Length: 259
Image 1 (cartoon, rainbow, N blue to C red):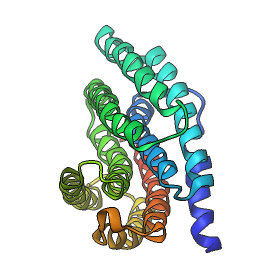
Image 2 (cartoon, rainbow, N blue to C red):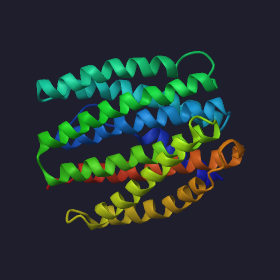
Image 3 (cartoon, rainbow, N blue to C red):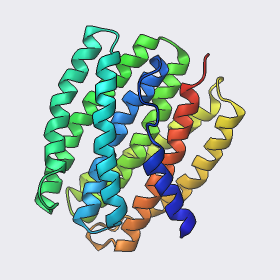
């Protein structure tokens, strides 16, 4: 249990330690992290509605909002073209709508459905910004930073839809989204493993990601909708945080490559 909570706590504390955008690889990393935060915030909100991992979920929500706010300013400031700056101006508006719902009164099922709907617009714009930063980089390593970073988002997206299914928010659609994200996650792991730029350290972290994926995927496969127990939901919440912590380290390692 101590090990389980320690890793999750590391995921909460360690994300986004650098205070400003250093270069284009770092911009791709942070832009991609905004995608993840849109899904992570929704996951935390859904957990709070169902009183799952309440203390951790509140920390995740608060810190996700604070980190998104900070990185949004950094990415807008660093934007090398008017087009990229325009994307982040638009994202600012979508984020404010989403954040207003996240920080409203006591979380409830009707509000949760709105949160899930609003996070889609934030995710789409955050992805658009990430792709634009990758194009500005024009290097193969930039694509790998994007792929690794997207794994963080997929980990949170699967957990979010698991909790949405338990709350009976479009359970059929939620199951389909989990299946799609699962396939994309597994395929991307193989891409990262086989990349010419991969280092010994990255390979070691990918082994850890594979191991954590087994635990996370086991929980996802026990999709029981409204019958999901608090323990099952808690397991999915925590293992998604553990996987996120590993994938964030991997993304940072790709970001630091000078290839």
